[in-house]
Length: 119
Image (cartoon, rainbow, N blue to C red):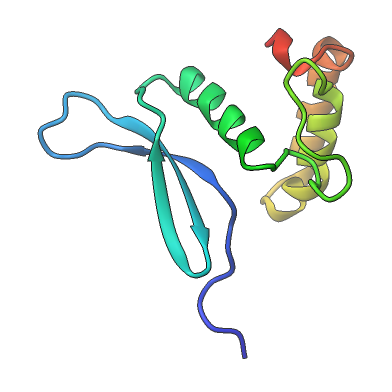
């Protein structure tokens, strides 16, 4: 029987500590049963997302399966590919996967052929 919870992978979390005027976004991840945090240095979600993306590239991870494609820069990844990965991996776990499918379809009408760095 496995022990503990499975690793959920790296993610962004907003941390508001006592005495701070605003929260700061941190990257949080686990390795070998230990948890780690790294500050993005910003309270702005957009900037934190950029820091997180570069952190993932530095660590050799990508939004898609790293064993197949390896990390890519935002100028090399199409939004349609990212939405497809999200739809396949995340939507089935949500309460209304059909709604996610509809949202992805609508997003693809505008963003589909563009690259991630266009956002």
